[in-house]
Length: 165
Image (cartoon, rainbow, N blue to C red):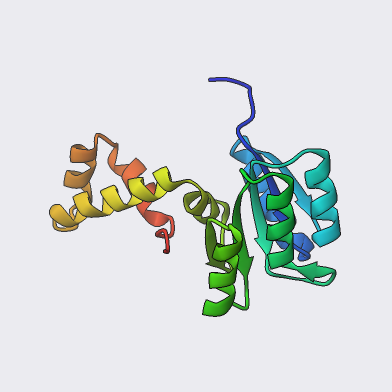
């Protein structure tokens, strides 16, 4: 195992408790995680050191999350962004995706859900697990054997929220 950190991630949310919780959760998963309380701070941090990944709340007191998506991608077009909101609507989801966000999630979302949305491999893994489990008639022990996992490991994976599209 290496001591090197994984990707850098910027969490942009005006809710200090939620932001701190997500930054801590990403740091525990070996991400170089930073937080920003609003649009201006997020853009300033990205100009200093552009993140590879970003989680952006849609509503902030000093700006709109869609503007942050646009600004982050103007700084670095390779940044992968997930937009979070407690006030979801189809129109804002479409706008976020058109601007370049890779996914749109409703709050509350945890670190694993966000990483699954950012990383298509996690989504593929989840779908594969679900297919194998279905083929086994819901028998977790049999599915675990076919997947080459310990039954408890599979149960932990299943306990996580499914990836929403």
